[in-house]
Length: 214
Image (tube, rainbow, N blue to C red):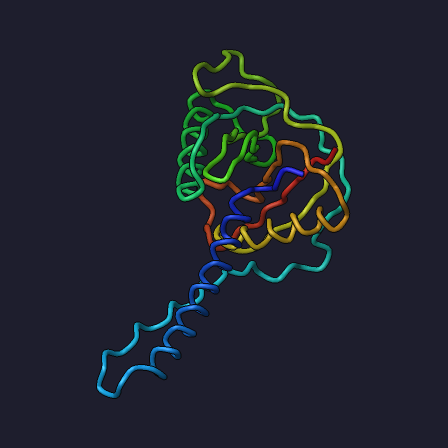
């Protein structure tokens, strides 16, 4: 199945590689100490293993793999593409631009903000930074901003609490959940935010993650 948020596999591989390097460095250092005469050059210190960022503890009742049906809703969105290293800043800027458009059109969101990931690979992703609205604006937007129906149908719901950086750990758990049950995800997934992502504390997020499955 296509990996959910492929960067997770890259991060996990990098952490594993760093551990191997550290082990080899320590082993080589021990061998060098055994063979080198006293007073010789000191071996280089071993590389520290990377520390993972953990999400906050889930609350009672938080969904993890709950089967849901995505509702029919109208969205206005700004589309874009970015790499994983600058993802948070890019998405924040996208939602700020979207809020500017909504304010100029005198529109108010009627539901949650969403990020719809339409294409991902190991280096980056294409996305739609979206707001739910009651009905399309009288004057259709142009350029990178557009209106459409949001994704519908059956999906699995997962809840993330904590920082944006710790979402990697949540997505790794989601990938393992799908693998264990031999479920195949479709080529998109959705993040639904409990508050405006342009104004939220990036260290204290509540995000519903929806993964449509085949």
